Amino acid sequence: MTVAYLGPEGTFTHEAARRWTGRPGRSGRSGSSGTMAGQEPLSTVREVHDAVASGAADRGVVAIESSVEGYVVPSLDALLGSPDVVAVDEVVLDVSFDAFVRPGRSGGPGLREATAHPHGLAQCSRFVAERGLLPVPASSNAAACRDLGDHQVAFGPRLCGELYGLETLATGVEDFAGARTRFLVLCRRDAADEAWAPVRAAGPGTWRTMLAMTPVVTGPGVLARVTGEFAARGVNMTSLVERPLKVRESQYVFVVTLDGAPWEPRVRDLFAALLGAGDSLKVLGAFPVSPGGPGLDGVLPDHAPTGSVRQQDAAATLAQGLLW
Image (cartoon, rainbow, N blue to C red; front, side):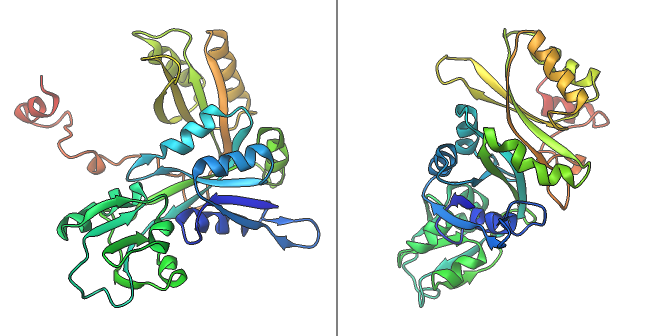
């Protein structure tokens, strides 16, 4: 088995791929020989996706959602645009960034730029601002570390320092401690049942489904109709985002993440109701909830955006927050 991932070696996606191939009950080992799956680093999310679609890789691993930066748009759009690839598992990683420089540069003046994947730069923005560095995006955090210049600081996982012989300038430089990223494991749609078989055979568990839904009409009440169908069947919607339809201006497809598997009766009934209303549907993925928790969903009141208001707040505070 070949597992493609966003490279080079040392990315968080590489760590997610390593963790997935080592999981009991997954397909990290192939055949009776017990040979570990081969891991192939590729340069872009699109290349990972295309390798799975063509059969050049049996599985692909891509980041799909950061607890700090939200959905990873290239990964989401690749799934939306493909008839052949579907997500069949997920991995959730705690994410922490160290700052690296070339050996001997930690005390030197001349550090002018900070480089990392755009999500990495966003998650370390305070460090960048405090040191007056110019952000320079890279294709991945590991690529930033591999290609690091003498005048640059790179952000990446601790493994990057070891792999590329770098000096650690600072550890844990992310803005928000406890950040996590979800990664999806991809396979060809016609191989999904085979991929799910070992997990389903292990017994019932908690599953999650990603669904692309394009409403038959738009306008007032569309989301109320859709969410009403969820509520009527007790299906929990954990996430709702929209992406533009590439061929029509001001038209959108909704990507819904829900609790349950497509083959569960209540979810099948929900899909039937939406289809009956004329909506177009496509399952982008279904996977058991990753060990260690239900993912990134759920917001405590104290974690709401700064300036949010609640019913018990004073009238002046409500007016400021709601602009009414």
